Image (cartoon, rainbow, N blue to C red; front, top):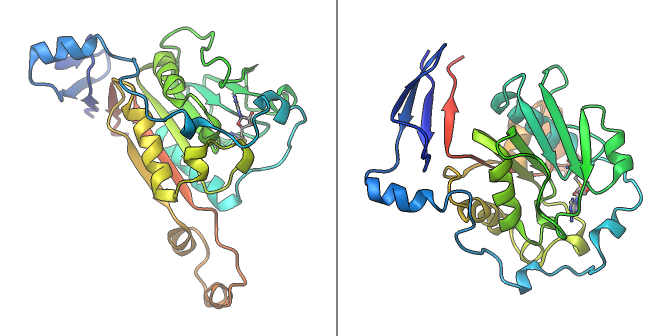
Length: 281
Ligand SMILES: C[S@@+](CC[C@H](N)C(=O)[O-])C[C@H]1O[C@@H](n2cnc3c(N)ncnc32)[C@H](O)[C@@H]1O
């Protein structure tokens, strides 16, 4: 078994590493040594801003904490979306890793049968977070006021952000902070649908289309030096209906007459800190 790492600007790795259990192959994206030295100094930094001042505005200008004062014990997306997300987590997150669930709430979408070393939650409502049985620990922080976490650098294998990225007014800084707390090779999975608290979503999101929102999240990753090229996973209703749901004649007739609701569209943008480790098992 030979895991392959796709590397992107990682100063401390040499082209080939042998660990105790596995031999790791690295595909370097850099040819020039000088180029590498210059770019390494920018690793983890915001290279350029994605949003204008206008793009960051919200219709509801009260502090976000006020909006989330009372707990909302609801699910924000439907079962079709959640099942795709849980399967994605099962596929991308290995057991026994340390996870930070950013902008979390009272439910976890992690597969319930997989054991992780530590799951830390972050959100805006302590009551919601205290009900989330998956969390070992949680913290409350308004990321539009202060984007810095108290976590040490390189402390998580994975960071997740589910149906919430549209509320970030300084996404560039938050993505850079995620980069900092991720371990090299760590994964950041940002998923979203077309639902939102309209007055709390930033202008660039509200005014955008599905395509432009995906583009936006891709750019949030690309503006921080050192994330791998973002990967987009997309399952729009027709694909979901055909693949995830029962495709019986009954379902087909129901759909024909519009009697069966379509699932929420699913989008995820994924990137890794510096490189991706591919496991064969
Ligand atoms: C639609 S809910 C999604 C909750 C959870 N991720 C889920 O999948 O059910 C949006 C979440 O974003 C968080 N949020 C919104 N604005 C925030 C801010 N300014 N800072 C930190 N978290 C925020 C809230 O705590 C809320 O739980």
